[in-house]
Amino acid sequence: MTLVELLLASAVVLLGAAIQGSVGFGLGILAAPILFLINPVLIPAPLLSAAVVLTLLTARRERHSIDLHGIAWAVIGRIPGALIGAATLSVLPQRSTTLLVGAIVFISVAMIGWGPRVRRTRISLLGAGTMSGFMGTTASMGGPPMVVVYRDDSGPRIRGTLAGFFVVGLLISLTTLAFFGRFGRQEILSALVLVPGIVVGFAISNHIAPVIDRGYTRTALLVVSALAGLSVIVRALLSAP
Picture (cartoon, helix red, strand yellow):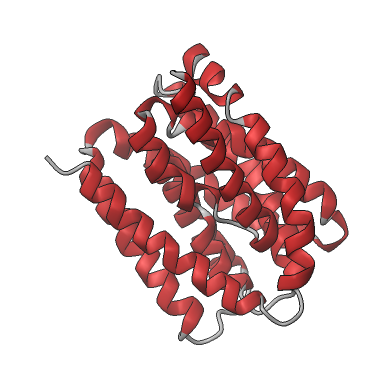
């Protein structure tokens, strides 16, 4: 990577980490399409690896609000979702996969903003985990399906639970990518250059999260989810022939 690419990539993940640390998700939504433009080698595995650092920091900060029961069922669903995602990357063109993820994102946005409340049951958590695993592995954005089932909870509950889920889910996705030959030494080295921006962005989120918790959590979730849809459109255009 050139110095310019490094600086641009660091700025992008800093902003994405600030958003995710404040809302609960958003790093992949913002960073994935821009990093692809800066240098395609930075996604998906390097970005997912750097996201592990962010999720660990967030989980530690919100540890008293984590829904461990919900995480357990969602993680069970994440495993087949990650396998399906990695297999999809191996057999389908990236543009086709991106468009599929885009359709799921737009459905999630509609449900977060205007859909009926989704009861947290084993089935709904398994389904959200599976969708999240597929989207996280293929497009580095596994947040929207999980937000659908936690949209009415408090800010700390959403951030803590998503962080706890992402810690396990990211490791599953990275293991799956390694099995399919998409995560190795080069990806690890690329991930290391993103970590400083991740840490600074998280530090900034410590000051933003309390403001969002003053009655703006649902709005923030909807805005970030809508950005996810735009992100997918951008990525599809970038990958168009």
